[in-house]
Image (spheres, rainbow, N blue to C red):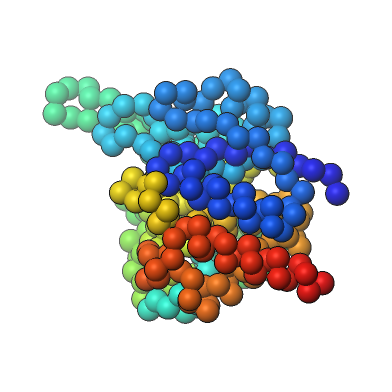
Length: 335
Ligand code: IPM
Ligand code: MN
């Protein structure tokens, strides 16, 4: 098949190490992908070259990029989502049989509105000692993400979409979000629709995560709940995500940060970025390659012999990656 060029943004911290791991695994599986590596960091920002590359290729895979706390430039992670209007942030979270936690039946998908809410970047201090951040919720973006959530549910055999909100308090902003979701839900009679306040949702997830299926949330709630879900299955080392826009444009990335404490030490767990790259392969229609890599990951984690430190193992990022490559090569040779 035709070779697809993909923009690769390794990022900083552990980013380059885990990006290297994805490249090795993709070579092993002979994925019809060609990497175009570009740099996005605090010095370069989102350069013209990067914008051109993603515009042309339409598909990106990115590692984490550090974001300064409380000061400095707008997060480059956010900048990329906004530049390409990647309005749907899709974060599936599935229990990994090989990694034991308190729960073995987590199977949720966070569909996070990715362009507005508290992430609109409209902040100021009208007087000293008083700060405000303006949360923008529009009918247009809420309807768009609700439609995305239901379409996703239909396409992936999901039974239920739950709208998460705090409309009892934020009657205007979250009220509009809920109203938009409710309206959209009537167009999808075959998918069950429920509503839950964000606080209750957090408790329900911790009590019995299997109750929840697809969740659709405003930006900040989606950010928080996706980390909560990750915690249920063993942490951010295991959760992928995709930022999806129109006309097939998408950037896939791990949910975790740059982990500066372990950067450069060959200790990082590349699983989340590998799972993100599997989402990317499926987005591109390369189901066979996606499954080969996925099986290698799941089998390796199940066997439990080759695991990185964050999962209680002893292996380096390279050793883990080599084990995936070995398994992939073995399955290809069996064919
Ligand atoms: C995430 C991250 C980002 C976010 C940061 C790094 C801007 O936490 O992808 O969830 O808040 O969206
Ligand atoms: Mn986050």
